[in-house]
Image (cartoon, rainbow, N blue to C red; front, side, top):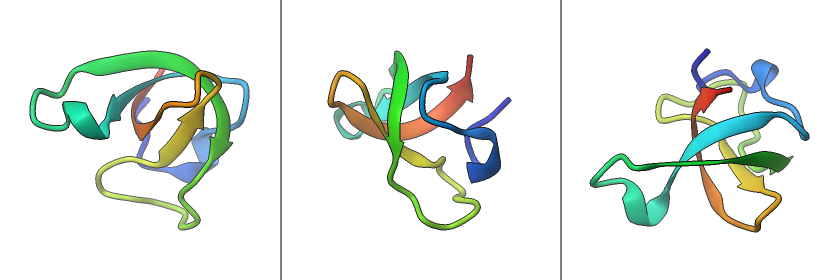
Length: 63
């Protein structure tokens, strides 16, 4: 499942995100969602979340 729809993302689920510094390479970082930062229902580049580690990125995949 991709991370473009906010309805499929909830705090506590495991996701793979692309961090801002990794946008050029597309490197994925796995983590658990702490909070959702995007307010709209969808986003073409992925819903922005904060992971429990404190990192912020856009959801690429829901694991």
